[in-house]
Length: 417
Image 1 (spheres, rainbow, N blue to C red):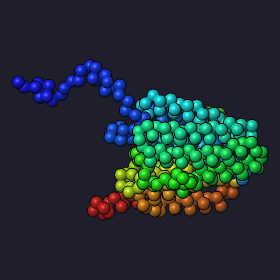
Image 2 (image 1 turned 90 degrees about the vertical axis):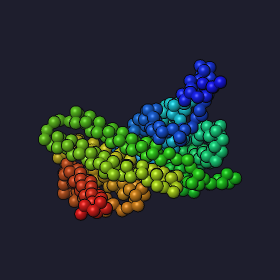
Image 3 (image 1 turned 90 degrees about the horizontal axis):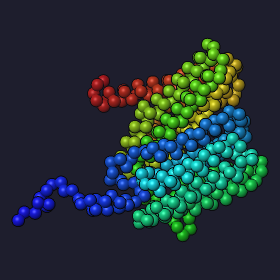
Image 4 (image 1 turned 60 degrees about the horizontal axis):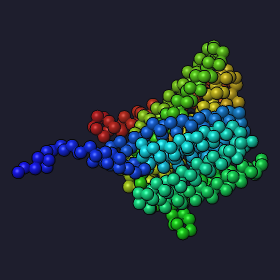
């Protein structure tokens, strides 16, 4: 007698068995075999908005404090903002965002991140403790959750890594909290030491007595996810800059100079988008497919090198504020520094990023940096609008030259020349 169940190619499970399979927990980690494992989830994008708000807060603070002391302070706060976001991106690279508990954790981090970002304008004044405790709390709590989530799936090597990370954040957290309790210059010094500690320890593998050190070869990285996450953050940051520029246009008195300033500001943002996304973002994703050590690539190209890229967007947004407010005024050094320094930081970051992901030295970016550096010497004889137009022209040269050189190399390889 033939067993019809065994012979049937597509067998439907009994309702009770199907229910048991559906209810079976699939864990808190991403399923690397799932074709959607690399996608960036909506809850991650929702979380990112809080830190783009933090970026906007930094730009507003810098615009009012372009002094040596103000630049040091905003640099410390920028490190804190970026380090919170990128370390959370590393964590969610492993976590399954469709799990209810993971979403709850992200929402809690989001709320704490909002408190942190709101405190940025007065972080060195009356809200120092709120800023510091939110930062330390997010870093330590997220690390401990990762230890628990990984141990429940017997990922003991990675759990040990996040334990090292959490301990180091607790150690640097002493400096952050001590800085919040200190006053004036002592706070700046302590927070500088804390930020430097957080930036340094990944390079030494989070080494700790008794726990050893982490190796980049051991890190389980979904490169496509991390690359897309950083690219989307860049898009949101540039988009926020455009929205702020549009808002300033609405507040300004409309005349030919203001409209020219608006056009230069928008075109500058578009040029920055082109320089990052035309070739760099795509090659970054492909680099993970060819990398022998994806953890090392992710640490350098996305964790560190993206810092000057995002910082460039922040400083450029400050330049746009000066531009829309006083386009016809003579360019003073704060305006010139913002209008040319922002694009320069952005180009430097892209230069390092493209070198790390494609092992090439983009000569177009070197030329752009030289042009922007020369502009600082010429700025004293120009208006703010003139300096902004010069900065945009330098970015345009970079974008056009990079495209032309890329086409030339492609044509050579394909025998079209």
